[in-house]
Amino acid sequence: MSNFLLASIGRKFLMSITGLFLLMFIGVHLAINLLLIFDDSGELFNVGAHFMASNPAIKIMEPLLGLGFLIHILWSFVLEYQNWKARPVKYNKKDRGGSSTWASRNMLILGALILVFLVIHIINFFWVIKFNPHSMQTVTIGGTVMEDAYTLVADLFKASIVYDIFYVFGGVLLGIHLTHGFWSAFQTLGLNNKNWMKRLQFLAMVYAVIVAVGFSVIPLYFLIKF
Amino acid sequence: MADKILKKLNIKVWRQNRASEKGKFETYKIENVSTGSSFLEMMDILNNDLIEKGIDPIAYDHDCREGICGICSLYINGRPHGPDTEVTTCQLHMRKFKEGETIVIEPWRAAAFPVIKDLVVDRIAFEKILQAGGFVSVNTGGVPEANSIPVAYDDAEESMDAASCIGCGACVAACKNSSAMLFVSAKISHLAKLPQGKIEAKQRARNMVAKMDELGFGGCTNTGACEVECPKSISITNIARLNREYLVARISE
View (tube, rainbow over the protein chains, first blue to last red):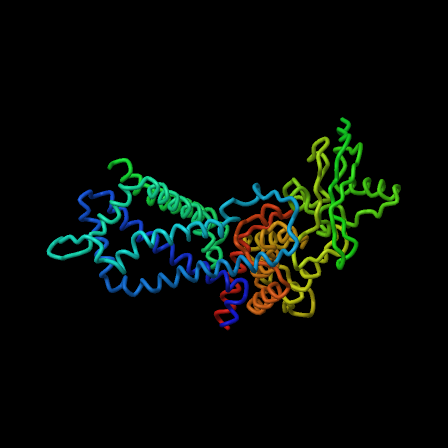
């Protein structure tokens, strides 16, 4: 089994499995985040965030998620290097615009930009909530004392146009990454055929648009409303 | 109606004496090329000029010149088999080019396809993959009755579509990763869709993929460029089938 992950299809298998795992995470993450714009008192989002932080299932998933991110990111550089080695002499003139999408050819670049976003995003929120909760305000909802995650997010988005634009970019980049990543993951697992190709590519586009618009709308909401 | 004449063209072409030597681009001028001539006829006219000038003619692969043998290659203006779809280079015509244009011609570029001379590359790697695929067991004896093994119409069609691969290597040339997945998937698929190839299916998938990796082809990132540039329009759904066949073969090991 060890040499399975060294074979070309095995290497991609790992990318697609971790990719699909991250896709599911993104869906859950977006669903909770959208609570931010449906209740300006912040109660709804705080309850959601507290549930996610205290739920034992999520506690188990958290390290797995970290591992998923690490594998997906680090492995992509290994694979790209191996693919790059397969063509030692490059072409002088390339005309690839008509035969493949820009996103499909630039998944590593998109991924690297998303990684930059991810690092700053983690510093902004996750790090504070996880390792420095004392710096945050607390609220009491339904008799439970919890960190006021809503204020942490809302203050950042209300205070800085730069951060708003940065988070919109993050959402859009992720969306573009998923236009290819979503159906590509199924293709790599062999879960595709001539009927499902169009359906999966359509679903990929739908999911990508939901992710891009969903994540972008949150900072824009705070920017425009407050 | 007489074909239009392209009065002047610049041909920027890769020249390399042998595998061990370094190559470089040379630009040659060619005059009065009929738009009705094929790309390879233009190459012949150019080579004739070069020979008359005492220059070594440009080496390039060609054979049947009717789009079925798969030997002609050439990466023309950034695309394998040039700026036309579903054709090999021999079926590409000069009407696809403009007056005064500089046409850039390069060999297929891949670690697994080393340049032999000028535009000729060694595609023995494909033969090695086929060889690794091994045999298909069939009954010996008299000719079997044609309908003794039923094959569904759709399966037969998909199998034949995959079997139309001519092994030209355009998929490898088009792929940003120099991946041979479309070629291997076509060769796996035309057997996978038929009852005859079933017995050796797992072994075939394992061995062909292992050989493909060993020969230094890159991995597939599903850009789909291979399908677009394939002269026979082999579908990348075959790659999904190859992935499936291979994963099943490895899991059941």
